[in-house]
Image (cartoon, rainbow, N blue to C red; front, side, top):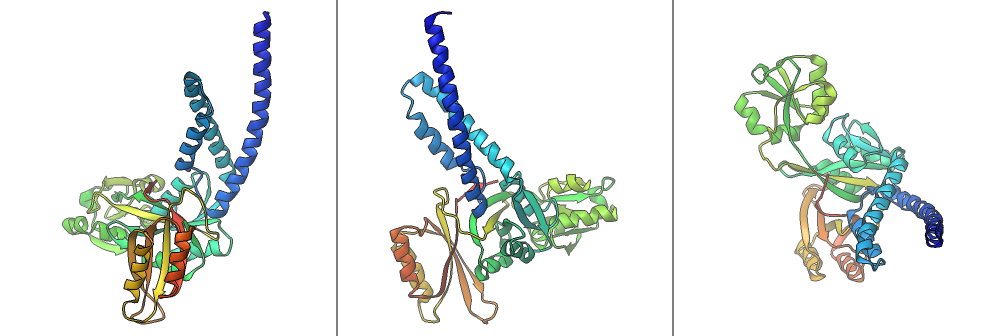
Length: 362
């Protein structure tokens, strides 16, 4: 063996030893990152952070050809880091409303793919499971692009103490499901959640079906499977059809081809991550002329763009309302603190209910 080959191999062995030690040290740090994500209900994948790591680390390599290989190397390290976090994530309890196959179940599975997903009978039970510590996070719908806001969830967020640490968009495709022997012509009655029935109103009317509400779409599919009646159909997802052994009689029957539901991830602690760039505020205004206009003006004054503004009635006070606002930017800045302090002057109740990254599709 030549001296140069021996020297090269010794360098490689030395580097491999150091890299193994550093890899172990890095993965221990990954455990801390995962603990933070678990505490605040954040998903494992953070695309913005991954891009930053690849870009900044590649800059350390000066040789252009070697840099290409190093970029692949660091991407693989990130992949292993996420795989390790996925393994640790198996113990996370994610609450959702409905039964297996419900859109909330689908959303929870896509946001937290390796978690322990726990079904609850309704929104408030899922929400309270996190409040009481039974679950780590809850995944609940807050808005549908066709049917509008999900008022019950918004009310829970306003009155409760959980924080939004992510908002994710799930494209919804409603389908007519029936038992394996059924055809579209056999169906006389369809059952589903009220929003699904609303989204498919035109189709139901065209077919002349009788419609009946159920607590959620997957439960409707469950009922159809149990009754095994060719005249009874469910409106639900194709995933639900697979779970309950039903057949998709007609696909994509919702009125709008663009049907998206936004799901919020709720947890007991408020996250603070560079990836979460937008904020959600809720407030009531003083019963004075121009109070709402003043609040909106203050938000604009400090350079924040409002991307959503909704009003909801206060349950205990007739004809009084609270407001839900989404803004570009966070309040964890000097400008944000000034805005919040000024808003307190025109608001009776004001709170930051969360932060999220916009347009996260799942």
